[in-house]
Amino acid sequence: MSRAGGARFARLAVVFLSMSAGCTGPGPAPVGPVLVPDAAGLQPVGSPLRIDFGRAEAGVIAAVSRLTGADPSVRRKVPGCGQVVFWPDGLQLVFASGAFRGWAYEGRTAGLICG
Image (tube, rainbow, N blue to C red; front, top):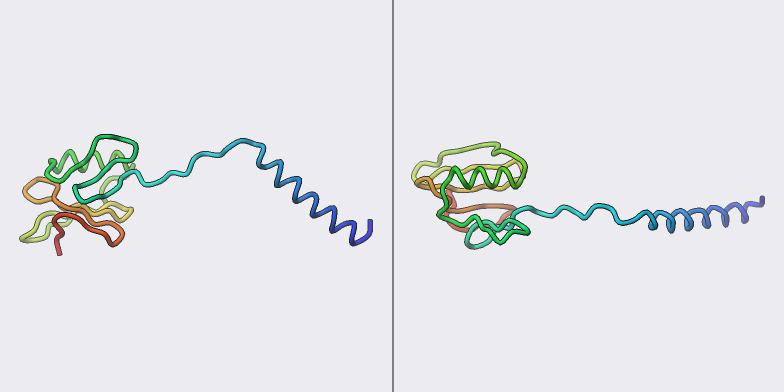
Protein backbone atom coordinates (compact mmCIF):
# COMPACT_ATOMS: atom_id res chain seq x y z
CA MET A 1 0.00 0.00 0.00
CA SER A 2 1.38 3.42 -0.89
CA ARG A 3 1.86 6.15 1.70
CA ALA A 4 -1.15 8.07 0.29
CA GLY A 5 -3.26 4.92 0.37
CA GLY A 6 -2.21 4.26 3.98
CA ALA A 7 -3.14 7.78 5.06
CA ARG A 8 -6.52 7.49 3.33
CA PHE A 9 -7.13 4.13 5.02
CA ALA A 10 -6.26 5.64 8.42
CA ARG A 11 -8.70 8.53 7.88
CA LEU A 12 -11.46 6.13 6.85
CA ALA A 13 -10.77 3.97 9.89
CA VAL A 14 -11.07 7.01 12.18
CA VAL A 15 -14.34 8.04 10.52
CA PHE A 16 -15.73 4.50 10.78
CA LEU A 17 -14.76 4.14 14.44
CA SER A 18 -16.22 7.55 15.25
CA MET A 19 -19.51 6.68 13.59
CA SER A 20 -19.76 3.24 15.16
CA ALA A 21 -19.03 4.68 18.62
CA GLY A 22 -22.15 6.80 18.26
CA CYS A 23 -24.27 3.68 17.70
CA THR A 24 -23.71 2.25 21.18
CA GLY A 25 -26.55 4.28 22.70
CA PRO A 26 -26.50 7.26 25.00
CA GLY A 27 -24.21 7.29 28.02
CA PRO A 28 -25.34 8.32 31.46
CA ALA A 29 -26.67 11.85 31.79
CA PRO A 30 -24.26 14.32 33.36
CA VAL A 31 -24.73 14.72 37.08
CA GLY A 32 -25.32 18.37 37.94
CA PRO A 33 -25.48 20.00 41.35
CA VAL A 34 -27.88 18.40 43.79
CA LEU A 35 -28.70 21.68 45.50
CA VAL A 36 -29.32 25.14 44.11
CA PRO A 37 -28.64 27.87 46.68
CA ASP A 38 -31.01 30.83 46.37
CA ALA A 39 -32.18 33.91 48.28
CA ALA A 40 -34.44 31.88 50.60
CA GLY A 41 -32.22 28.85 51.28
CA LEU A 42 -31.53 25.71 49.25
CA GLN A 43 -33.55 24.06 46.49
CA PRO A 44 -32.87 20.34 45.95
CA VAL A 45 -32.71 19.64 42.22
CA GLY A 46 -35.73 17.70 40.97
CA SER A 47 -37.77 18.15 44.15
CA PRO A 48 -40.60 20.52 45.00
CA LEU A 49 -39.42 20.43 48.65
CA ARG A 50 -37.06 23.14 49.90
CA ILE A 51 -34.57 23.70 52.69
CA ASP A 52 -35.44 27.27 53.66
CA PHE A 53 -33.87 29.60 56.19
CA GLY A 54 -35.30 29.06 59.66
CA ARG A 55 -35.27 25.24 59.51
CA ALA A 56 -33.75 23.32 62.44
CA GLU A 57 -29.97 22.80 62.29
CA ALA A 58 -30.00 19.02 62.81
CA GLY A 59 -32.55 18.43 60.03
CA VAL A 60 -30.77 20.72 57.57
CA ILE A 61 -27.38 19.07 58.18
CA ALA A 62 -28.90 15.60 57.79
CA ALA A 63 -30.73 16.55 54.57
CA VAL A 64 -27.74 18.28 52.96
CA SER A 65 -25.44 15.38 53.92
CA ARG A 66 -27.86 12.89 52.40
CA LEU A 67 -28.31 14.91 49.20
CA THR A 68 -24.61 15.63 48.66
CA GLY A 69 -23.43 12.19 49.76
CA ALA A 70 -20.94 13.72 52.20
CA ASP A 71 -20.90 14.68 55.85
CA PRO A 72 -19.68 18.11 56.91
CA SER A 73 -15.89 18.38 56.92
CA VAL A 74 -15.61 21.22 59.48
CA ARG A 75 -17.82 22.91 62.05
CA ARG A 76 -16.69 26.26 63.38
CA LYS A 77 -18.31 28.48 66.02
CA VAL A 78 -18.05 32.18 65.24
CA PRO A 79 -18.49 34.28 68.41
CA GLY A 80 -21.37 36.73 68.14
CA CYS A 81 -22.70 35.12 64.97
CA GLY A 82 -23.34 31.40 65.10
CA GLN A 83 -21.93 28.17 63.76
CA VAL A 84 -20.60 27.70 60.23
CA VAL A 85 -20.72 24.16 58.83
CA PHE A 86 -18.50 23.34 55.82
CA TRP A 87 -18.93 20.52 53.28
CA PRO A 88 -16.02 19.12 51.23
CA ASP A 89 -17.41 20.67 47.99
CA GLY A 90 -17.14 24.20 49.45
CA LEU A 91 -20.75 24.70 50.59
CA GLN A 92 -20.94 26.61 53.88
CA LEU A 93 -24.11 26.84 55.93
CA VAL A 94 -24.61 29.28 58.79
CA PHE A 95 -26.72 28.40 61.82
CA ALA A 96 -27.74 30.79 64.61
CA SER A 97 -29.84 29.89 67.64
CA GLY A 98 -30.18 26.33 66.25
CA ALA A 99 -31.68 27.39 62.91
CA PHE A 100 -30.43 27.65 59.30
CA ARG A 101 -29.74 31.34 58.64
CA GLY A 102 -27.40 31.63 55.62
CA TRP A 103 -25.15 30.00 53.05
CA ALA A 104 -21.99 30.71 51.05
CA TYR A 105 -20.92 28.83 47.93
CA GLU A 106 -18.55 29.62 45.06
CA GLY A 107 -18.37 33.33 45.91
CA ARG A 108 -22.14 33.75 46.28
CA THR A 109 -23.99 34.24 49.58
CA ALA A 110 -27.48 34.71 51.01
CA GLY A 111 -28.86 35.26 54.48
CA LEU A 112 -26.64 35.63 57.53
CA ILE A 113 -22.91 35.34 56.85
CA CYS A 114 -20.41 35.07 59.69
CA GLY A 115 -17.14 36.93 59.05
